[in-house]
Length: 232
Image (cartoon, rainbow, N blue to C red):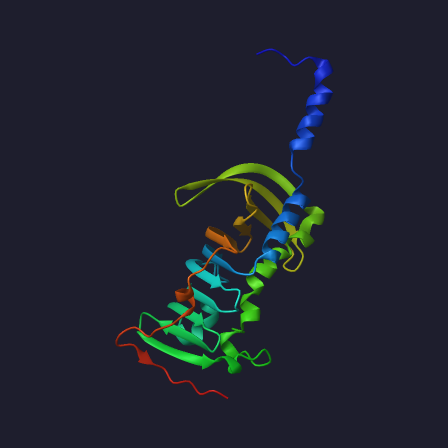
């Protein structure tokens, strides 16, 4: 292999520096992308370490429409009072919040007017504004850019598909922990996130793509038993 002439080294170093993306700029583009999104759909596989040390895994699907309707399905520990940790389906159609527990074939509903910010109860805040915070959280990645570092470029394999990614690390100010993210080089979608508590891998990321109206409708399955709730 022939050595590079010494007089070309400064020019090559300059060219490499120009093509190497800046970590802060990468996070800024991600923030802008998610902040601009009016609707979204994600499928995320999560692994988390519980206080006991046990590792738990779950897959969650989330869809949010521009008309402030949404759908969530999977294991949702935030709603354990309803599903006792089982798989659940949550649909907010603008008038009612519907929940369905496949294991027991039970469902129930909460009027939209009862989803109050001042009294979320044990079920958590299920208002559309709270669910919309999913993308709002990603839109604030740029705020962590002060100590952001581009670690490398990597080919991330997700369910048989390969995506060229920027791998960026930074410190999360709220949790005071190290965060590493994989960002799709093509569209600046966040595809993977690692923290000391666990990982999240996004196999589906749709921002401002068409969503079926059926996602935001709920029809009780045959034989399902309705759970009557006492609403204040």
